[in-house]
Length: 96
Image 1 (spheres, rainbow, N blue to C red):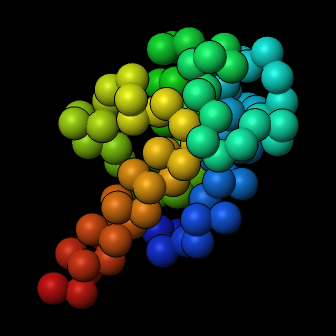
Image 2: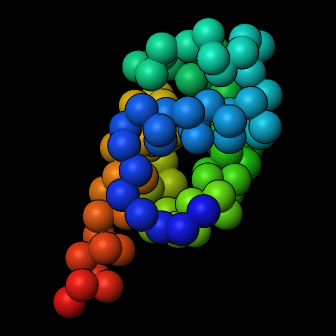
């Protein structure tokens, strides 16, 4: 997928796919609200990294080291906000 600004709803769906593929949750990602605690739903630190790597490949972005924290992957809404920030930063850099 090209790096482009995606809507919050679309990014949540992409994140749900990543969690289904790599998250190892006890429940379906589709059953969780965007603000649900992913760690309480069973996301392990190892799986969080796997989800992040899946998202990097799917969105053609790279999460900076500063985002490699537990709280960065706490909810789908948090992840969506981080992705939005990354994509906006990349768009500004290309425009400059």
